[in-house]
Length: 236
Ligand code: BV8
Image 1 (cartoon, rainbow, N blue to C red):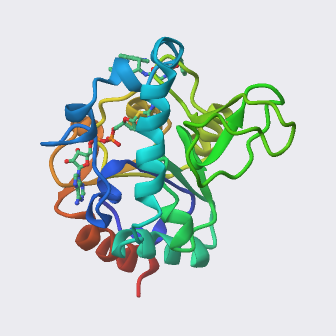
Image 2: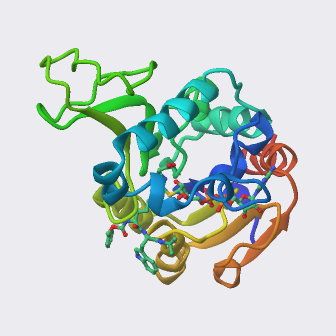
Image 3: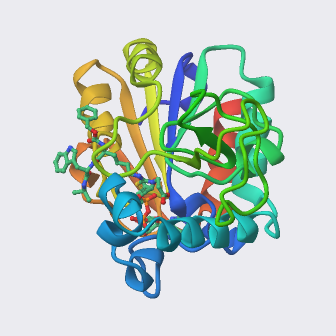
């Protein structure tokens, strides 16, 4: 791949692998979240309708857990890139944790939602929320007991697809970090980026399902690969 410094508009897609070394479970790995819970039992609107307590407990557990974790060197390197990159840059994350922001990144878009906001289905607003939802607490904005996790469940439309597609149209470099390429539409972004003429780079522990769409793949832990790559891009 050509020298990194020549690129101007970068889209970075991150997945669970970028937070793995912060101690947050990934989904599909040994003992990952989807090994402990069936997706259709905890991460679909049907599951929430069928057994809301099971779903609320699942997200209460994860919401509490991420608040005990810290950003790692990969999050910090991306925050440094975000704060110094003169061109367009968007970190599109599939993660619902807040480690990118806690590392200082600002140009971050959570396409699958966030643990630390709740969605009030009565007033359709999203108040910041750090506590449990199992007791059906009232919405702090409208008082209704209609709060649900502010995450995109399977079968639901991801957030801000227009913003993502606009960034992909501008991008001359698409970088994917710590994702298995198993979940759509995120797994299809590399193909769109490639077809739109962008260079494509994958940084992952193992080849993802969409690996063949990447011009370059670098294998290893995010806390090593990402700081190295950011050094290259910033040329210093
Ligand atoms: C939708 C929030 C309509 C909740 C999540 C096309 C084909 C087939 C199926 C579909 C399709 N289109 C839609 C579907 C259905 C479905 C889907 O993709 N199903 C899959 C399972 C086949 N998609 C949907 O339902 C989506 N909605 O399609 O709406 C629509 C239609 C048209 C256009 C737009 C919309 C909604 C999907 C979102 C679901 N919500 N999360 C929650 O978190 O609980 S998905 C959730 O799982 C994550 O957000 C993430 O997206 C996904 C997990 O994937 P990864 O992050 O990649 O994690 P994983 O564990 O799999 O892999 C980790 C990787 O990291 C591995 O590769 C590993 O090697 C690497 N790694 C590990 N450690 C490290 C590391 N790398 C570096 N360093 C390390 N240390």
